[in-house]
Length: 133
Image (cartoon, rainbow, N blue to C red; front, side, top):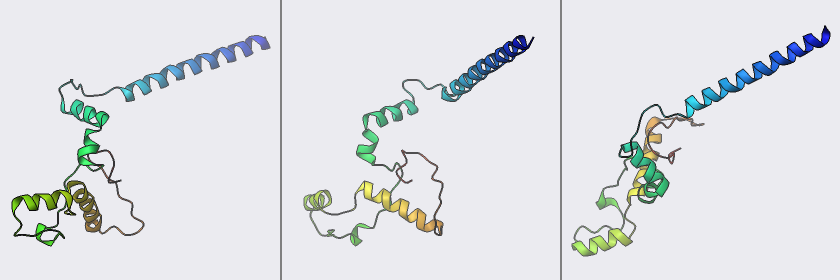
């Protein structure tokens, strides 16, 4: 009689574990399945491709948002009376603020604007690959 009860308990445990495994597998599958159908030509697909190919990081850096630019007149290396090609040369090879630097400045300005006090805990929700974080 005791062997039958033990067998029954073991059988119940095995069935329960099997059920839990199937349930966990289904829940995992549900979380891993995209909820919106994206085709090959969708915006989401394009961003995924750019991320895989490194296009976003190359051109945008880690921050995919706008930048904060100092007026040209206030940047070192800027000369208002420079001819076009000299100005282009200075902007290209000089230390005028570039697109990536402007985005880092924008992030810092937003942190200052938030008036968050130390220790700073800020939830950064938005687009991008987490550069601001």
